[in-house]
Image 1 (tube, rainbow, N blue to C red):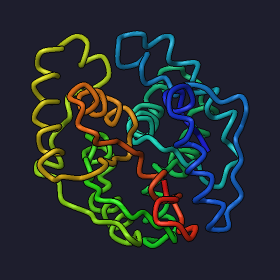
Image 2 (spheres, rainbow, N blue to C red):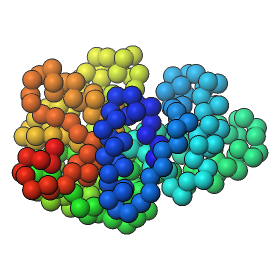
Image 3 (cartoon, one colour):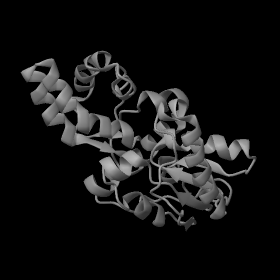
Length: 246
């Protein structure tokens, strides 16, 4: 598992949830201790020279993995879209070959379940009213389609409601939310209004970056609506108590 620096620092429960789901399905999960950032935040903000060494580090950590599972579509998009070009820029033929061999084994978490394993029902139980936001990288770069929704529909006890404008950006976009705060806030207002219109208890997505942005607005408005990563919903089980799932 590649946890990503974002989840490791701010949302560790997501990584734990991924491990619970994969181990429940019978897989062995390894966590290379030397893993660090994929380099997305450097690359996207102009510090491309600083991002280049992280390609070799990622390869060194994961070259022997059968599959690399990542609970963040934006980081997977960074690896798939930019690592081959970055390796070429470094002019290291050996690294280029390793990147070419490794990239097809890197999966966003829901993608690994639906496309690599061919699963929809992972034995989850989550008795709550939930709506789903499709984050931009997952929707447009990875083309996850309705994979996350199929996983959610198979969750027992869930009341899944469609989010109007599900595919519309929430306005986060990393530093976009800082550099273009007014536009970002307007986009966020539209997204949170749509979430509230569903009367959902929780909004889920495949990326905690989007969820953090959405949760900020929901919290400031004192709506009582929570955000929860898809992995945490899929990790929940029926323990015999209606309120024990989360």
